[in-house]
Length: 347
Ligand SMILES: NC(=O)c1ccc[n+]([C@@H]2O[C@H](COP(=O)([O-])OP(=O)(O)OC[C@H]3O[C@@H](n4cnc5c(N)ncnc54)[C@H](O)[C@@H]3O)[C@@H](O)[C@H]2O)c1
Ligand SMILES: [Zn+2]
Image (cartoon, rainbow, N blue to C red):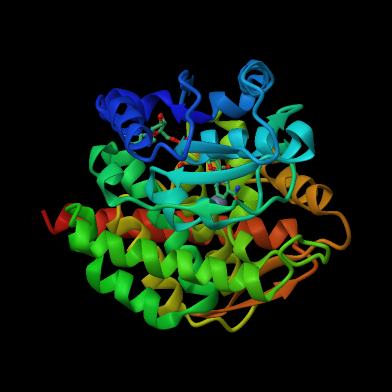
């Protein structure tokens, strides 16, 4: 049974025929003739009717535990279909074919799925590894510039906590990545996916502990997405979250200024709107600060936030001071304004 992101179908009109041709050739496989189309983006996770649509198809076509549900799409449709597959009949095998930078370099490899509820990201979901993941760079060619760039933030994130050389590689290759050079993008996707997979395979895949290093920058990112009514994309919100937590790392410990400048400069060079007022923390009443409580609540246990010891190495903290967050946000705001002025003077 194929579940497909409608946004992908409109950019790849031959996709349905290609899938049919493949199954006509490999007759050992049988294909459910109807393709289940789901609108791409966060709407797929926000409206329960799309989950029901997949359950209806699983039920109607008698898809069982020895069958496969294959999903082609961005991270949102992958999260939704992964959840349907993990729960129908207590678990149908599933294959992910991610089609965005973000889903190829991060979520496709992951073990998590889910949908949003009560205005909270991923409130309902399970941990369930896929049976296979196929990354095909042909899909990336039709992405909007915005979605092409958004997924790069997850690569910056994982490089900052795990691999300083990879961060340096992204700095050097920022111009070619911005110009949509597919060779550079393939390297970025592969290295990022590798780092995610290594972490998941060697660590706490089912997140029984309190630490979630791969969620560096995410406590605020999830809240920014929600506060913007999902106008800000996940990857864009992650870029804002990385900027804020970099500033917090600088304000609270001897994290070198030069390293903080490099990170913020890189995010600005990609054109991430990290100085968007939605990410400013101006007072202790700022709704963004609630993101900390929601982040802890989602995971349970002790609040554990990853900040940076240095580029390539994260460290965990268990307390975040709202006053120092305001200071960090202020520093970030001033630095971005200063950079913008220099750019204007430079022409
Ligand atoms: N499960 C996890 O571990 C995990 C990790 C990170 C992010 N996520 C989730 O992933 C979601 C974000 O995923 P995303 O960034 O992939 O974006 P997305 O799924 O929101 O898709 C963005 C848009 O791109 C379109 N699209 C997808 N592929 C396309 C293609 N090849 N060509 C043209 N258009 C295409 C979609 O139709 C949609 O309109 C969020 O819900 C986030 O929470 C999950
Ligand atoms: Zn993420």
